Length: 88
Image 1: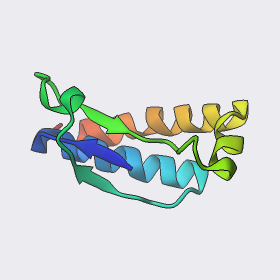
Image 2: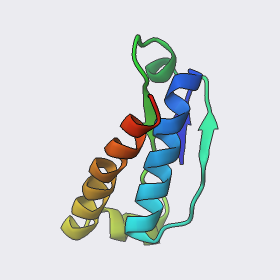
Image 3: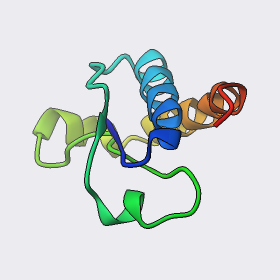
Image 4: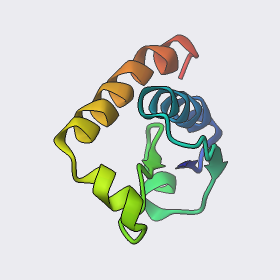
């Protein structure tokens, strides 16, 4: 899931969720508005992207694998052109 505060960051949040879901096969938990300091006190679009939950044993096992880290990084990088194309 990915949180945004300013409407200008919503396309970035949606692009990130779509790319991470597509690359990792994880459940699409969507992009949602959230009142987080790191997303609301910026002058540029900002999001808070959660890639998994370490308290969940099965997700933890996946999160610590180097291949998973690379897949997530590739997905984040792949989302950038979609955000740029959205006039974000």
